[in-house]
Image 1 (spheres, rainbow, N blue to C red):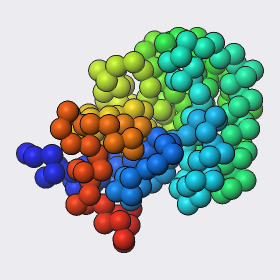
Image 2 (tube, rainbow, N blue to C red):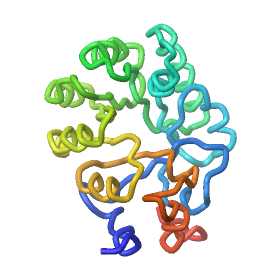
Image 3 (cartoon, rainbow, N blue to C red):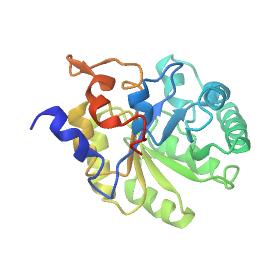
Length: 227
């Protein structure tokens, strides 16, 4: 099956219409915006996200990935403060969809401890609890059910993301982070409720041939709004 034949069906698999969140970027192709239910933005960019895209709901990231990527230590006190501040700003603009609770990339059980510690201060918000390698998925599902929360699948590999999604098996709302390629999108569309990526909005080349805006243009229906 060709890429273009697959794409319209991607939005209709799994638990219903796949929800696509675009990572915040200063410019986002109109074809991408038309297929996105909202943006993923960290606390650092939340003000610009609200100002630049005032009609797009925001899934607030917790800043853990960019800190890990740049080798910066992110103490809990600093992380929770920035998340709370970002959540309040997005909420005040009527744009807050949910908050990804704090975690620590690559820290396994220690990361889950931080997530659990954040539940009380973030109790007033809709939450996605991040899971990664080393986190007890069954325990995470139980906590989500208790707290009426969802799960955010992080982790360093797509193998882990796929195994976690299969184990969760639709028992709670599930969002898989950083799904960048068509093959991955095709796989996760039948396993989770929502995905995100920054790759698409920055028009990075997809499978070394076409970028997302080119691929999605025939289906975006920008004038009428596909979603």
